[in-house]
Image 1 (cartoon, helix red, strand yellow):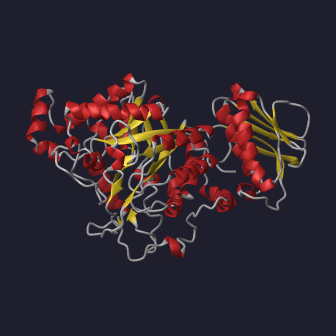
Image 2 (cartoon, one colour):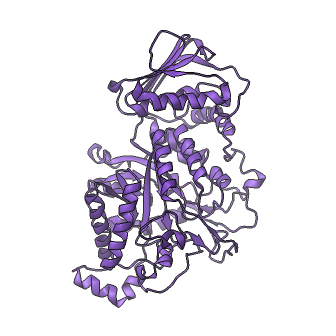
Image 3 (cartoon, one colour):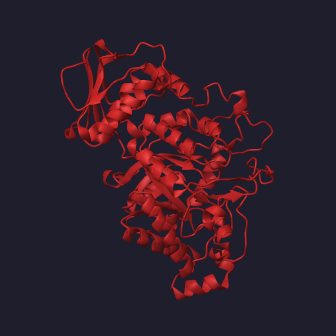
Length: 537
């Protein structure tokens, strides 16, 4: 099974799904019961009626068992019955996912398939190590249509990941309808072309690109994810990575001039100004975001904000003096603090990248530690909650090997084994500090992923490894994981996932002739060390 369960004992016999099999559950577990019915019906062709009776028949029975703990489950299979118990509704759902993994991979196909629909008699008990088991999906650089986001949610649920961090805005696109400020989507969602490759002189493709989610789309995505016990965390990246917003409303920029939606990758000097009118605008944006997303945390960016325009702008310098701030770094901390305060007034917590640790950070902020684990150590020692996402372990846009035919090779190799070795908790932390590491996530930046097939290639099977690292306790054995992964890949095949093979990219997964930007591990470590130098415990 994958992720590896804490306890699994095979018993004698098997349970056979047939025309007499029913699914029984109390009313509060009806959503999970109907989800399981929908997962089993297409491939098996069985009716599998759902009811509340808990009789002695040939049944799959769902139960709540709060003593197990939140998200924990117990799966018991005998020749006559399957019982799935969960410490919460989420735990029951994960038990249903575990049951699917005990069936032939063809259960994931959408039409009746010839297979032997039996489950081995077994006892399984399991619980997750971390409460934040996530993926960041960048839909700003390359837009993913709603149907592809829903498909990705299903793949997350298969691997018991429970947090989808949606990177909704960046220089290259604004992907969310905001009714008070409609030009954000009408203008900011569309760019003239996209850079092809990672080199400084990489050409554009000459092809317009864009798209955005209506508010009804977002409600559907959020509800669909919630049915699978996945929380969708939105991110509006501020005050850098904001040229798409400035293209829609030039008065938000420092220079106040008209700009296009950015068509290049990399860090952009055009950032937001910090006028009270801009903050009022952003508060209105965040109000609509909060109304759409029930998530307790809301991302407000904070990363890679170059200060050149603030430094050169007389009005910004005047604001720094009026506000009694020391410099441009203090101004960004002030700006972030104002937005975090507004989220707190709405009952939410700010979620930011670790760059904000270069200054004071509001007490309830959740930090995404991306530049290695320096941010995780610093934030935890300051008493801030942390989501670990170190680039050299879980940035899934990084190349997957040293092979010459990796598509658009970027940064350092991040292999399947590297992803499997990911541990969100820095070893230097005390037990008290380590409790602030609430989990981790893989980050999928899509500059070089212009279609869903390419997202599949970069994400899988490395995301399988990350999912296990975030779920399972205890020692890890990569060779043993590879054996279980070999059994798991046919499930991905049945689901149509175009993952990277162990032998390397298939011919249509390569991008011959397109320049990348590879780095050695030594060069990259030096680069990251320079980035995090301003962070102090």
